[in-house]
Image 1 (cartoon, rainbow, N blue to C red):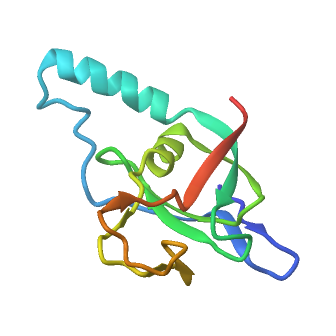
Image 2: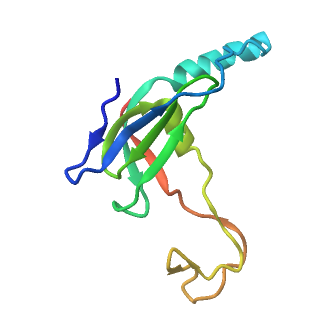
Length: 141
């Protein structure tokens, strides 16, 4: 059974939908024994439920709507996150969002998110990593 959370204005957040997966769960049977053992351990760790707070660098008005399905045969879980709210979600989803590489700011760029990249208004000389946009902060692991 799935219980959807709603804000006072009626916006659904947290786990908002569960979809069936048409890919069969092969239980890693085509893997080498050492790889299978490692993946089974990772799957168990990724399924662990942790309590986290969602943070968005752009502010409280932004949202993250994300499907999550890491292993074959698992249901596709649809999540919607609101900044400042606390959620209990799989550790694998936390890793997926937090370990995502930062976007690149490309050379020749003059503005990013409406702000000048250099104080003097000159274009960016080289490619650089931008800041993260979405992050989960542990409440208690």
